[in-house]
Image (cartoon, rainbow, N blue to C red; front, side, top):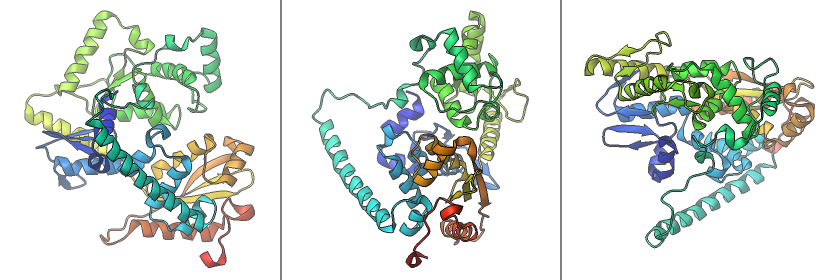
Length: 425
């Protein structure tokens, strides 16, 4: 289990809610393991932050919110059904029952209210269960030290031999998912684990041995292959095909990749030495320089300067924007529209449709009928930031969504939403 996953499993409820663990001289993000160091001042858009406050800035920029990160975890981790996840996302955005019903196209406003009661009951049951488990700890001498989900047991445990992959099968899988050749774009990343491993070992060949990459550089390579680059990056690390520093500031080819296995012993020792020096801070990768170049620090002050610059560059890479989007059927022009506080998450709609679990059953039925290529996901409007400190972004987003409902009228032959009753208008 990686350290960031371990934190999520062992952190207290309060630590999970705020999104980071406070250690003696640092603060570590539960979502990704990113760390800020006590005593260092972090500048961001003209504002200076101490380590604790900058961690909150990082969480907002990189993950949107702790709520959004937790909601996207696997069902085996959260215990939530797809319907419950969708409803919680809508509730988190402050939508009323009628608005939720209109957005998801399920049941009626009373149905949504019933779901609220079910979730509250689930919360009450969870409290009792947590209390029971806490009391059990004092008596159960045979309990495991920590529970590890199946998802979190993947890291560095799967190799090609465990799948028993023949060359013929490998060629077949690569032709299936890379119709333009192994260096071209990939059709999808939704596939069985065996195929996923074959595909990932091929993708790993695009990374050079002994070369350190920033996360931005890794993303740039993976984006050319498929839009689902974040999940691809995570699996590359989980399978040991890529290694990375704890804070995610540097990535390099892992020993589990075919390229890594071809290194000579001397090359491996040199690569290992560079990794240790990078982790210790003696070498720091500057995203503004050429990928092969490294900057050797000379003194504590210069190390901190390089570190601050690196943190600023990482934070600038992520821009959180709220807005309204649509899923449009190009065959018949029908649309599904919704809003989100973080437009980065709209790819989750495509994932639910691919898995056959989208909450709007009309949209799901036509997705199944026409196929994925018949649909496009488009941003209709990005919500402008209001400098007024008393402005409510959720209220502004709701009004923006209602304007698009009035404009597009996505009901009947024009869309996948149920036409609202006159009492709800």
